[in-house]
Length: 254
Image 1 (cartoon, rainbow, N blue to C red):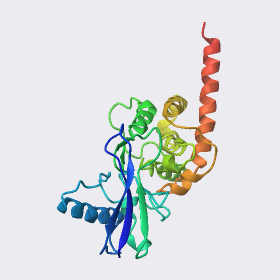
Image 2: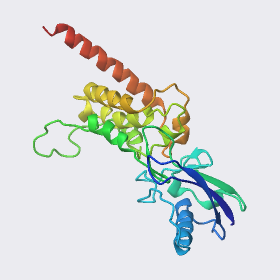
Image 3: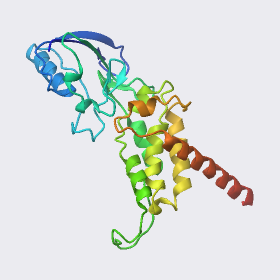
Image 4: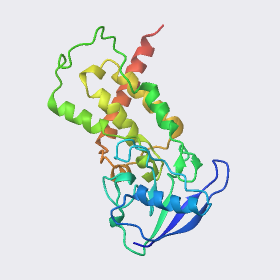
């Protein structure tokens, strides 16, 4: 396959960026998208030019670092697929492919196609954990978990934190990410004692960085793990309950 790439190049977060065009001849249709970029970078390095900076790690659709906008779509044209799992056979010989970083104020560009997603870390730090003092380690099956609850919690825990939901949302909202991180703990028996405090802390932190959800639904369409927006509704309900609980508590406080 002979391709033409239009790649966003930017030296740093405070500099202006621009698109640069690269020819990519002789690309195998069996390559992954990141392997194709590896080949392009090897050729750039051989010509004494600076390679394209992009994020990657496991290349197995687990780590969430392969965050690229491909022809205007988060992770490219294949539904339920991370960039590292996207193969070049999804494109045609002679195609021009536009490659950009995530576009969101909360994800400032570090360089080229790499962005800073530490705002997600702040959300998880605010409450994405369980602090119940359990003493010595209990048996794994000591607390029974109904299978529908376990399945739903696993569906939420499938979130890899890639940020595609934010990149696809016209409001740059992070409700899908936050609701998934909230739900996989709030659904389980072990997460009930901190359920409402956790929800309030994580949502309040999220709103410091990201836009508001207006139910466009683009987030679930872009999510490589196909996490549904049902979790957002559950999070909003728990957040309302958390605020009402705090209001009752404060009204009783001298």
